[in-house]
Image (cartoon, rainbow, N blue to C red; front, side):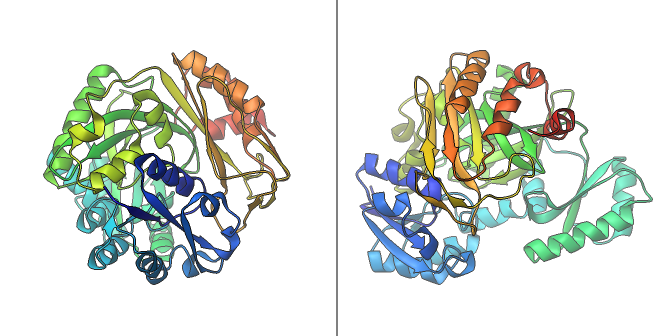
Length: 451
């Protein structure tokens, strides 16, 4: 096992990794920007190193600075968390060349899965179900039109290097294709430095389902089941749960088996998440893979009793799957997670500032992952996530009631938060009945007006 790990991240995920390391008896090194000097990861890590000013490019995304901190602290491994450098294959390569273990997959696999069109081709070859679409990059709007005629409108053009909904356009007819294609291309080039696009059949009213996997470095891959992630706004998830009401045990086992086989074939290891769209016939279609721990990983932990972050660390240290899991995966009950952001609940604009009061809820089956505290500051430079509120119960109805109770008891003052929005969602009859898709929030906001 490693003796010392550097956490190349901030906020609640940095604190989450510190917790896992403490339970494994591993010393931790936190890195921080000047804006995070008084953060809880800095307080609870065994060592902390300032790596620069608040701006991401000069601190958390500064690869030479992160590696220098790791070398100064004499760590054996780096955990990247999620976001920031977590899916940066170049960073993983630099870690490798510096003799530091990157807690994640191999750089070449990260690179393969990071280019969505290549990932799509790899999954298709391995037998994972995908949507009809182009055989690779579409070079022009004329070529896009040819594919659209084959696939049938509506279609969606997507950035190969994309994420977060950028470089993506839904095209419903031939006339609007040239303009939307050029707009997606320009947005992708500006956001990712890569304007390559590919095309898929557009699924109307889909659900967003993702599968969690763990893979060791000895060829063993296991599926830990699915998460329902359809409650999202502009492709940003707001609420997740596990299991999905739409995934049968048979479908869960079928997709899990295909994923385990396909990921073993490409030499994948560590944690990973494979995302799908589910159509109205309950068929799943691959859309992308995230080669890291997910923000919503706690809902899987709650229903499987598997600590995914500890599993990541053990796998990176060379452990075999049987020593990581100690038995088969068993799902118990239902779990829901709400992402509590420092945002205006009606305008969705960031709300930086000092937290004047902070009281997280507790009680049976309630978990709060956060690095926030009373008198702490939400800086304006980073993601607006304050906390992840997670509940577990015997079934979905009880989980919804428990989450509603926990939201009511969650006090955050000094900044706006999305707690009022989440409370409204939990009270919505369609949500309670499980009648929703990825367009739920837009319909919900139109129906409810101001939150």
